[in-house]
Every structure is written in structure tokens, then in C-alpha cells.
Image (cartoon, rainbow, N blue to C red):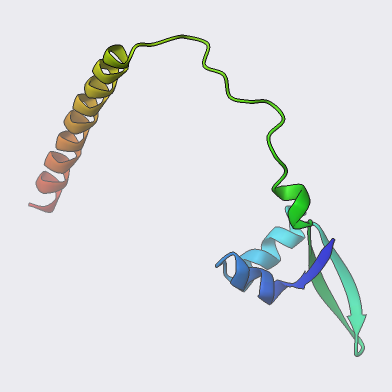
Amino acid sequence: MKKVSLREYAKMYKLSYFTVMKMVRAKELKSITIEENGKEVPYVLLEEEATLSSPMTEPIVHKEKVSLEEENKALKLEIEQLKRALDKCNKRTILASS
């Protein structure tokens, strides 16, 4: 495990320092406190890269065999539904700004 200061962790994940402090206090992040120069300094413990990027144990298997035409139809229907939903949102936005 690698130890990283709270500021470094905040920079790595583009978070605010305050947010990282809250995560440490809420025990959302593994951390340790080390005394340096008479002050207690909290550090975040990061897991090794190898354990995080381990290969998947189960391959993805599609249970249903679907032809390309059927899949294409399903995707076109989904696109139409999304377009209608987007139009509704745009109309609400226009009405709200008027």
C-alpha cells in the first residue's frame, strides 16, 4: 500500500481538499495518521496498481443470440425515444426561460 497526503490525493482525483478530509473522517477512504514534527498528519492509503487492474475472472457472455437487423431496430427505437425525451426537455427549458 502506498501512502499519499490528502492534498496529493485531492490533486490526483481532482477533488477539493475539504471533500477528501470529509471522506477520511467518514471512513470512506483508508487512512493512517503519522506524527511529523510534532503534528499529526493524515495520509490516504492507496492500493497497488496490480490489484486494481486485475483481469476479469468471468468473460462476458451474451445469453441471447440477436441478429443484426433486430439489434438495429431496437437501437433505432431507443434513439427515437431519447429524441422525444430531449424534445420535451427542450420545450420545458424554453417555457421556463420565457
